[in-house]
Length: 157
Ligand SMILES: CC(C)(COP(=O)(O)OP(=O)(O)OC[C@H]1O[C@@H](n2cnc3c(N)ncnc32)[C@H](O)[C@@H]1OP(=O)(O)O)[C@@H](O)C(=O)NCCC(=O)NCCS
Image (cartoon, rainbow, N blue to C red; front, side, top):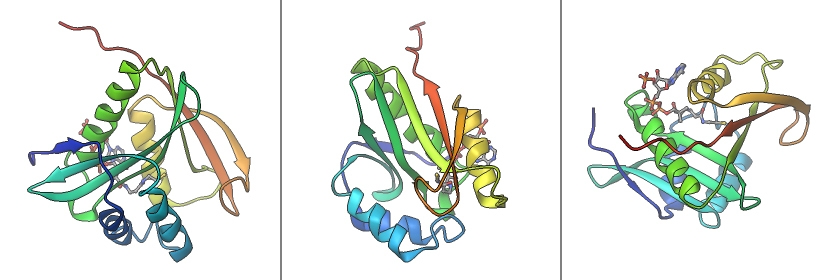
């Protein structure tokens, strides 16, 4: 398990590098450039291991009570080692402190068969996101699944 530090700051060039390490999810150049641009505009949390940015989560706060995880990605070499979980938990803690209660995420819907995005949906399910509705052509040319999670303050022991 690497020593993962979460930092609330932006690093668009690292985001570009991370997305290019994940061609099964981010294979379209236009999409990569769009996310990289967002990485310098949106609220950003970075996961840093040995001074290298290995994961990113971008956030948009739509209302005081609700926010959207607009991107989460972990460098291919660091997947499955707790980086995504640590990023998500840090972001959720920051939102809860600010009184935010709902977190939504958009991803590719299950009616479009794709092994990569099926893994993504499993990750979101594991962390308490529930499927709300599948929409056609809202983010891309196929189905988008909207998922939402109730943010609950963890009780102190
Ligand atoms: C999804 C992603 C952010 C998760 O980050 P990660 O660092 O790989 O995940 P973690 O190691 O923190 O896993 C945390 C938990 O989720 C589970 N999990 C991770 N990937 C999973 C998968 N593919 N299927 C099922 N469960 C999964 C792990 O089992 C782990 O559970 P544990 O804590 O009980 O062991 C990362 O794998 C990624 O970048 N994927 C490709 C890009 C992507 O899907 N982005 C979202 C696009 S909408």
